[in-house]
Amino acid sequence: MGFNPGAELDLVDLYYATEGTKYLALVLCVLLACEIFATLPAEVKHVWNSRWSFGRVMFHANRIWAPIMLAIYVPSLFMYHLSHKLYVLIEESSQASIASVLIARIWAIYQLKIWALIALCLGCFILGTPSIVVLQMQASAAHLMKNPAPELISGCPTTIYPLAFVPYLPPFVAETILFILTIYKPLKMSRQVMTPLMSRLILHGTQYYVVVFATLVFIVLGSLFPRMNHVVNGSGLIVAVWSIVCSRLILSGRSWYDKSQIAYSIDRLEMTTLPHSGWRDGEVSWRMDVCQGDSKL
Image (cartoon, rainbow, N blue to C red; front, side, top):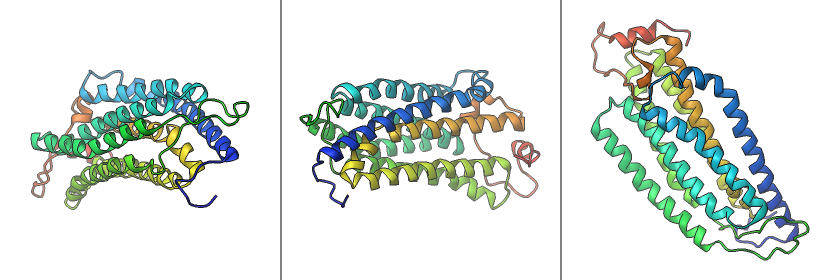
């Protein structure tokens, strides 16, 4: 199939695009369910025993919201045209949930300073607003197509905006900025002393960004071809990936704190700050001494 994002799909392409969208959505639902069950023991051990905090609330919201929304959205692919507008709602809420988790994490790295929180929230608002506006415009412009072969194609095919990946660009810019903020301070501090905590922050931040970046690149490239455009933008791919990597990010951090036996309560894990980088030789804080003792992690 040649590059022509605005081309109309013929019957064969429409069939494969519709079927591909439905089955990829089903695979993502199964993958999300398997991920939840696979990490449930770690969740029970490291999350359920902690007191309620902002980090825990956002973890549960991210953990529950995506599966519920996909469970509602996927059947609509087989029945009627609620799917596109419902997907817009799912994606907007998913973006808000993931942004909240990342804001809390980065705010903690920057010592819970109010200016950092205000800057993070303002930045996410500025970058998130264009994405929401474009998504709403696309949802309003979407319309039903006459099903040319109802005996072969289930559901009601809808038009897909040729440049459907555009709403993902502002969140990608936001993800890039948040990634830089996540690793900047640990990298800066590592010039004086490297600890397992800093290594974990850098490693986890990099892994999260690489997965999200690869997913967004796949969506952008897929959006350039009419058949793949339906599949990558209508299956819930980005919602499932965001939910999985965000849950893994929090669980990995909480698990590390438990294993390293940090002296302060893990209830404040997502809101635990790094020590200031302005220490002199031999004056590393007690928290970093504890971290250095567990070099295996």
